[in-house]
Length: 259
Image (cartoon, rainbow, N blue to C red; front, side):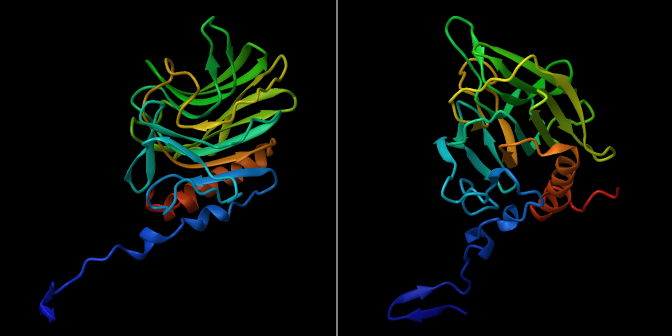
């Protein structure tokens, strides 16, 4: 029934935001591998604050422009739409793991890649490359103006599918691109690096420092950043956790993988 209070008419029902709308998605604080973990983020509006860093709350993401938060499961990001600065500088060895959508055109998961006016390139970049095939590619900086990349086929995914993807740069030195599917466990394609170099640019999520390449929208849900090589066993554990725990809790998948 309608209630009147001194001339104020209240509707018979009040629609309040759900309690979850005010809560951090704190499952991201329960990462099963924590050694070297410097960034843990959930970027969908399911998380009350997508800039919150569950690995280090004093080092949040810095938002640039206007990421699209309309999906509770992910942010839609690009260098022209909106992206995040992690405030984290790449390390000699590092691991990045993410839940991301397969975009309709090449999009960046995490990067500090840049091409200057003379064409010199530098930086690392984990990207989904979309051309005649779908590929996960990881650029690793090997010199002041050189990079080496590794590419892994992800053509089993349809455009718009969510997937758990990752990359490791190891002290060997080597670079590996990691993926898993609903039918296959986590695995990698690995390339040896001639050397390893880093620069002082911080890692961005959803964009690189170049405004002419890799500029398309990509949906990104969760990102983990380590300042070390967590190894094959640990990245397998983390990828399965993102798929079966985080992904299910976020509503990306309805249930854990059967195997």
